Amino acid sequence: MINLSKAKQCAQTLLEEISQARTVCLTTHVNPDGDGLCSCLALKRILQHQGYEVDIVTDDLSLERYSFLQVFDHVKPYDGKMRYDLVFMIDLHDSTRLDARLEMVSQARHVFVIDHHEVRNDLIDCTCCWIEPKAVSTGWMLHEMFRDEIRQLKSEDKIYVGNCLYTTLLNDTNNFVNANTDSHAFELAAETCGYGINPSELYRLYMTSRTPVEMRLLGQVLSTIELHDKGHILFVDSSLDMLEMNNLDKEATSNLTRWVQDLKGVDSVVYFREESVGLYRLSMRSKIYNVNSIAIKYGGGGHLQASGCMMKGSLPEVKRITLDELHNAERLAQ
Ligand SMILES: [Mn+2]
Image 1: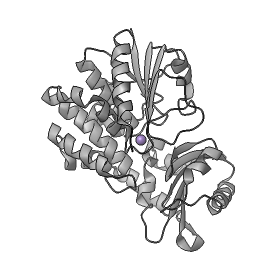
Image 2: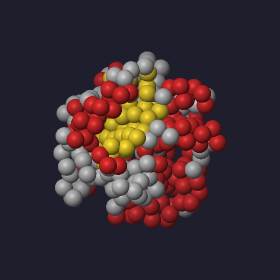
Image 3: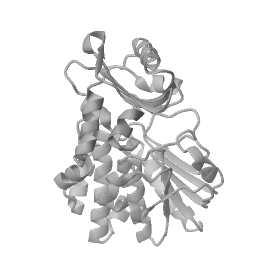
Image 4: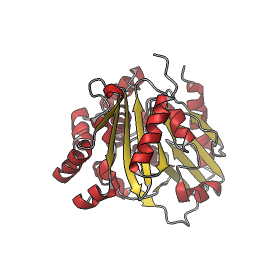
């Protein structure tokens, strides 16, 4: 059962503390995604309506994909010196996914956290935190916290917040097909339709907005598909050369596992993305194994069935280690 009293308590504490704060910032994990980032955009609009000016600070600005939400009008890149009285962290709860912004967070007077990743043992020091691994997206959590405030917005703001929250669902459920798709996801989808959003338009803007060159990259990545264990385990990878050849940045490889995770006979998928020479970023998805414990072992994290981490070594080495880890992984209760 999801503890909804926590939602109300966090929302109330935030509204109390924010009135005392001179400066407020919203932030999310490194390599922002459609859940954390769009939740920040939604919360900014909600708080503006309450009379508060807040900044959204991210680690980088390769956010072209979110231009349909006017992201560049709202987000500032971290410059190393930014300091805020109050920091609200969304879609993360530990220090490792903040990078340089850890300094900004540790100097804040108040830190608020909402997240739905499995809890790691290095939860950041905070005034109030709500971590709910069963929540479909942090956008859904925000909606539980500020439903009343959202209903009071004027129509165009309600549509904007609805667009942001619906995008958190698109991202984290992969358009309502991932294992986390539940009644809460559909309830929030219905609610945002009531705010005036257009689901098919958002699907087009967010999920199918690839350029022909990005599609060519995808083709190259898919051609690396490698099968193990009679086709139950699928590996796929991308190299820095592929990005360079196509003149694309790493953002072009985001959410790439969705193209292979539901293939016939495949239970587990690992995508190895070359970050620098001898360093790979792993995205693991599994229908049967707890891939979160593998990720945590290598300093990463995520959800039971969808997690990520970094691994050092050559591509054949990291693949061999990962295959061993999967062979020893804990099976999830079905
Ligand atoms: Mn998320």
